[in-house]
Image (cartoon, rainbow, N blue to C red):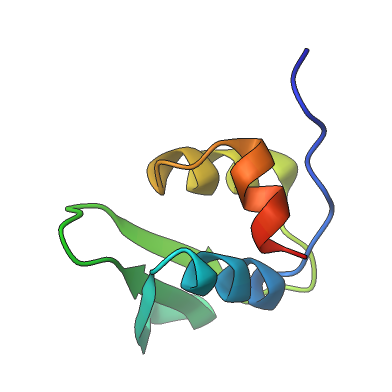
Length: 76
C-alpha cells in the first residue's frame, strides 16, 4: 500500500530536501526555487506556493531519489 503524502507548502518541501543534501541555487521564473545536489544530474524546481499538489510532490520525491517514507522523516 502506498503511503499517503502530506499536504505541505513549497517552503516546507525545500527545507526537507535541504536536509537530504540538496542545495539552494536560485529562484527561477515564476517564483520557483531551484535546488541541486552534488553528483546528481537532476535539478529540482519547487514552486513557492502555499500548498503543493500531491502529484507534483510525488514527482519531486521520485526525482530526488527518495522514498515517500524517507521524505516524511525529513519533514520531522
